[in-house]
Each structure stands twice: as C-alpha cells, then as structure tokens.
Image (cartoon, rainbow, N blue to C red):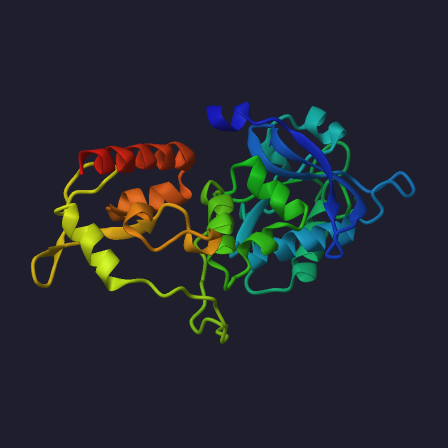
Length: 290
C-alpha cells in the first residue's frame, strides 16, 4: 500500500486508436483508498464529450491484455462527500463487473446503466441519474502508473506486439518487465517469416585456441565454466571485443573466452562499458605475460 501512495496522480487525456487525444480527461493514481483509472464526467456541454468512446477504448485495451473483470466506483465530488466510503459507491452489487467475453461497448453500457442508480445524494432504487459520471476503475494486479498510462495513451499494444527483431524483443521485454499485468495467453502458432542476414565466417582454429588457452576459466569473472560438453570440453563462449559487424577481426587479439553470464552482461548490462574496459585490460595483461 505504501508503494501505491508514493505514486503521484497523473492527469492526461485518453488517446484514440489514431494516436490523437480524445476530449476525455482522466487521471491515473490513488484515490479513496483505491488505485486505478479515473475518467472525468461528461459535461457541462462539450466538456469531455468523448467520454463514451474513451471508456470503450479503455475496456477494449484491458480485454486485449487479458483482463476479465474490474471494479467500478462513482467518484463524483457530491457523492464522495455524501458517501465517504468508497465501497458504498461501488457500481455492481456483486463487486466485480465481469467481462464474460462481451464486447467493450456492451460492458460500457452496463457500467452506464449501473451509474444511473446514483444521484448526488446516494444510491436510488429507480435509475434516473446520468450515465456518464466521474468514475474510478480498478483492476486486480494493475497497481502502477506505468501500466495504466500505457493503456490510456494507447502504447501498451505496441509494447506487447510480437516482433522478429531480437533487439526490439529485448527492449520491449524490459519495458514490460516492471509492469503489473495478467498472465498472457501467448501464441499457439507463432507467426514466421524468411529473412536474409549478413553472417561472418569464423575460424574454428581461432575459436579452439581461445577456448583451450583459458583452460575453462572465464576471462572476466575468473570463474570455471558452468558445465562440460561431450569430450570433457568446458563450455565457454567466444566474444569478439570489437564486433565483427563493426569491422572487428576474427583474431586472437580480438577474441575472449567468457562464461554465458559474462557474455550476456558485456552485451546487455548497464555496466557493459566498464565490463568491456575490464576485459580489454585483462587481454592486455595476458598479452604482456605471453
């Protein structure tokens, strides 16, 4: 709960599928003991007149990432004053609004019908109130600003979209990593395509010499190889200090034997530059010894 309280409330507009902001102001943050998405009311006149379209889009995007239910509360100023308990302003008597494989518009219409049972004072037996009030939506597991903002701004699907590019896959994975999201369904039959790549011929002689000369010890962490392959050969990976695609040579001077962890770290970690400098220093020391 303290982590939620530490997150600032962000004011923005729901972004349409054309990447243009709608006339639909909203907030993401913590209110009345709940963390979620707050859609401002429609009116007077044209203020937030695209309320319904915005709510359709939010529900649609929640469905797309696997959400199956939400909680909805009236969050208008009058009702917050007259009914301070947020639970008394919950729209659905059964707590959750279940999606049940319905279209976003149908779910939004249900939320609208439930809003009509509230006026400025409290809940009524007969629905007469308006259906575009200020509402608060919460979803179990969606407890951070970044996730909700990506839903509101229509960037979540770009991040979640499958990709053939390894670097793009890494970037997207890192963006999603700290988000609180439902478990994905994945793809039973992933899309495929044929591609042409530039590859470089590498010398098995150079590779074998680099690996054997290190006697199974990583040149960065100085730890033994994690396992042995057939023939009792320690498993290390050969790293080109200056990448071949940057004009690096396939020579002993430009190659190093690294364990898988260090190899990944020198390419991907936030300390990659310092690790590269450390490796270069190690190579220089080895050359001097030889």
